[in-house]
Length: 129
Image 1: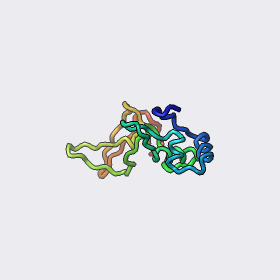
Image 2 (image 1 turned 30 degrees about the vertical axis):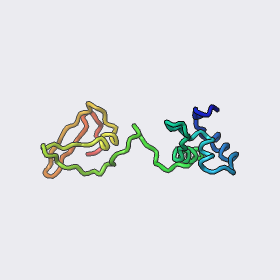
Image 3 (image 1 turned 60 degrees about the vertical axis):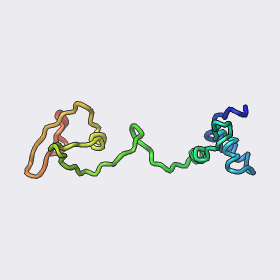
Image 4 (image 1 turned 135 degrees about the vertical axis):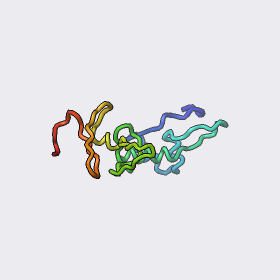
C-alpha cells in the first residue's frame, strides 16, 4: 500500500479476521491497518474510529438501530390526532397515507357527522359498516 493513499476499508468477515490477527495492536492501529483512516491536508493519517467500530459491530451481525422502511428517512410516528390548521384545513400526514398504502390520486367520499368526519375510499370494498 502506498503511504499517501488510504486502502479500501475492510468489512464483514474479512474485517473480523484482520482484527483477530492484529490482537496485540491498539484500537487505533487496528483501525488504521483495516483501512479506517484518511489523510489530512498535511498528509498525516487521521484514524476514523467511529467508522471502524460501526463496521466491526455490523460485521459481527449486531444491530442497534431498528430496520428502516421506505426511503430510509426518520421522522415522526403517527399519533392518530390532528389539529385544524390556521387556514381551516385538516392535513392528513404521510404516516397515515403510507400505513394505508394510499397513492397520489386516490379519492375519498367525506361524510360529516355531528362530532366526526368519516373518509371512505371511492372504489374500495365495504370492509366496515
